[in-house]
Length: 265
Image (cartoon, rainbow, N blue to C red; front, side, top):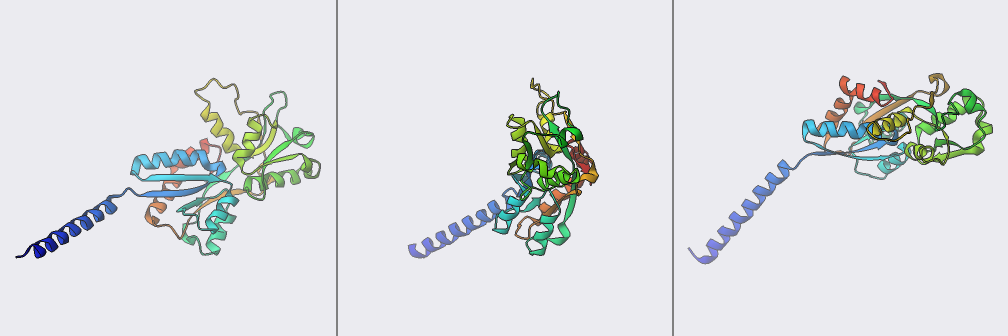
């Protein structure tokens, strides 16, 4: 045998070895999910993702934002596997546009709206809201379902026109909460979940803020905030995406959501 034949054999064996081992690398590469999450659900989603990863070894990446902004990103091709919206309208629109799987639509929680006051000497109640003469914080109703619920509440109590010029809007509920929490305003219509998340965050700290000066807005004051999740058709991790939704819907994890201020669904 000549050196040329031996060299060809060696190259063939080397290429076969590299391809075989590359296949092994790809086969054993850790799976992961990328999830778009409405701002109100960010803290519980992070906790659930951490628990899911500990149980399965699957990495979960989370991108938070206003539901409307996340929806726009998805429409323009953002590489998410799952969308946890603050409403049911946007996930259903994705199904209508054939960008999401209809049989994956899942109502995972029901949100609650509160009137939050940072001043103990100004107890949050209906009288405070209807006679308020300073800035009132809400999330942008064009982007955030909780902003839409806030506007509906103001209209229900017939004080929208008098307060319209005083509204300070955050691009999402997290920014709206920051406006109140930072002192830019002392009153806001916000998700209960954000106050519960803040309470949990400061349990072990010396922060004097208790996040307990709020009035739970009666449910009849605004349309139900049914939060839905949906799997996007572009996902390459369909089985894992279904597994994560089932994980969120498990009874012990629904109890976690109740601790964060949601009504289990």
